[in-house]
Image (cartoon, rainbow, N blue to C red; front, side, top):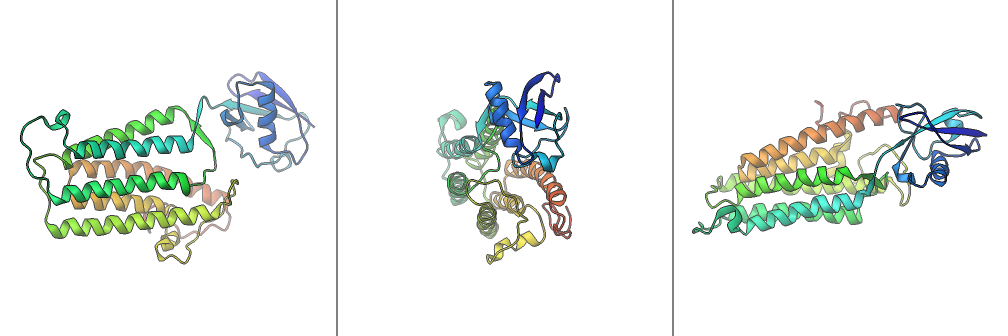
Amino acid sequence: MEVEVLFAHNSKLVTKCQLQPNSTVAEIKRQVYSAKKSLNVDRQAIRLAEKGKSLRDSDTMASLGIRDGSKLYVKDLGPQIGWTTVFLAEYAGPLAVYLWIYQRPWLFYGDGPHSPIHHTVHIAAACWTFHYAKRLLETIFVHRFSHSTMPLRNLFKNCSYYWLFTAYVAYHVNHPLYTSPCTMQVYAGLAGFLISELGNFSIHMNLRNLRPPGTTVRKIPHADANPLTALFNFVSCPNYTYEVLSWLSFSLMTQCLPALVFTAAGMYQMTMWALGKHRNYKKEFKDYPRQRKAIIPFVL
């Protein structure tokens, strides 16, 4: 059968694809790329309508109800960059920036005499280093992405967010006038941070095992034998829940207002992501557990 592919923004013809009922959206993307070399497959979003939802690469013509003479629309997503590249850049920056400011450079604190560095400052630097080193290693060895690329503009947006917030937090925690909370509060925050980081890693490993290498298979995530994954019984995105708990614990440990601001900003963004993923799970899987919330057990 022959299917016309039009530009989503002006409905001009891009190409006519020769397809079979079992042909997938991925095959359409390859034929569009053959006809228009500026649209590599990663830049394309194929839709049933000009402003419709993007179709999955695995969707077949039969499942979409596409027949001979049907029309589809392609949206140019713009220049793309690999997810792994973006993650490595946005996580390596905070690691480097924090450890630089941890040295109390003259650019931030001048050349005057510095007070002794409190042990809480060292603990905070170790926690920050552990978190972002973990993220870098997970990006390389753990995460399996459903899409290979994202828009190039995200690189600048994400790096700006992480790098600038890092400088904001690090400046205050490493300041010569920084005052540490009591020892009990410091170690309570440290314990919460480490447990939350381990929980976050456990969830990432669980999600990784759901998707075989080289595929975009989606399944309902469930808790496994690791007790830290039991949070799946209550929320759809426990990795975000643990992430928020990590930074709440870091804020408690350092008693630093900028760290709490960073936590609040991160929680807002992760809540938006979690709500979106939660809605998608419920739409995609008819048997999705109804008792689950998005990110906060029993609440949200």
